[in-house]
Image (cartoon, rainbow, N blue to C red; front, top):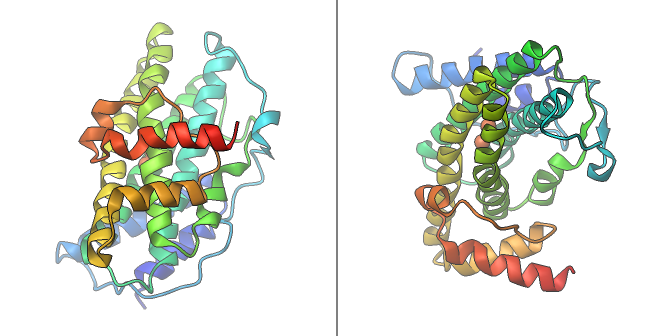
Length: 276
Ligand SMILES: [Fe+2]
Ligand SMILES: [Fe+2]
């Protein structure tokens, strides 16, 4: 029996091991691509009940962000910690993209919506695999260090609000990735580690697409419901995102991804006033 896309998503979410999770994610993404190209069995979207929290491996230990030790990026230990944090973000992103498919199956959306998030999930899976390869080259592995516990909070907060999910996950969190990745690439350039530079450059290029999909479907839903996208974005980020948006912003890449400055700049000021 062929699983529905929503069941595939739940299957990925319920797989704990990072390698197993990303293998499954890539397998299902290929099945979806084959179906959409007319080369594989039909896959229905379906509905399913995703877990509140995705399954995660026993390691890394998850700590509150303030308890995760900081290390200097100019040292081997610092570079390993940085890659470890990226691996954790990528694994979380795999789950986030499958979760949006599973969790909002009841909201009718065009097929392109599913194409986009399946593609993102597949790319995040490859990002995780690439970064794990870099960690191994430096004598480490995903799970060797503690990681941030709070990564799933945005998903929980927006579990009932697709527009809120799009605002906070791709258009705030993934857009933040565009702001900080060039600095990370420089860290590995200084250390002359070509494999890590290459991995981060792939991530940087593909993440523009993820933010763009977020913006595209956010605007689609606003248009369908006849609401102003900028006002809706400000309301939803204020409601669901805890903390101010932090400049400096990568305005060029944000623009490429379809997020204009008047979406994010007003949120730095207001939130800072509200949460000093
Ligand atoms: Fe990624
Ligand atoms: Fe992403």
